[in-house]
Image (cartoon, rainbow, N blue to C red):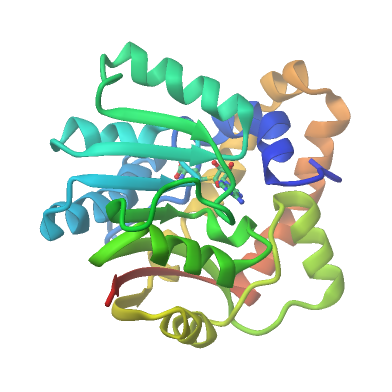
Length: 270
Ligand code: SAH
């Protein structure tokens, strides 16, 4: 899980791990309240549904999904709407997987997927009504540039909907190194700095929610899945990969619980 050149290479190699542990959605789950005992899969769909609800509310039809993973969130939107979707990812493996899934669902005419870096979007200005960034921006080196590129690609009054990790306080250098090696995570902003950065990029912040508590149970699911999939992980990777993940999980959990948070935001291009 260590030492990848970028997030693309990371997902090319670690994609099979996420498929086993998280399934088709490469993102955290959202549980509505402490009594919500739905499965991880349902909770992950809940998070996607927050994006879908906002998208439908704004009435947009041209939607860009930045960091689309294997296409599952975009496919879910396509199945519930008449939207035209374009997903982009910097993992070639994910492009192939997304295209296969889209084809299997018969959604070829409505959902496209391309290999593209969000730091340099190859779309004309004002191409999209809504842009999604579902847990992808934390991988990106130049966040300001990405916000600027999205701003350009959006129509006036278009919305950027995103979830992302934030820092409760700056991570210690060793923790940062650990998280960037394990998750290709770039240095995080605090929630306040994140909202300010969006405003500086020209957006009006319409919603900005701290949903850390709603997604926290994902950690328990992560641990349970790794235990459940132990032999399969060893078969696909090797025994040292499995022991490395098991050995690092307490530190991941501690960093996550003590130093990180998670936000959901809806912002508008003016
Ligand atoms: N949104 C998807 C996948 C989240 S995983 C889901 O919820 O299932 C993070 C995604 O961000 C991956 O698809 C990864 O390839 C993508 N990504 C990371 N850096 C990127 C960049 N610079 N440009 C485009 N996509 C990027």
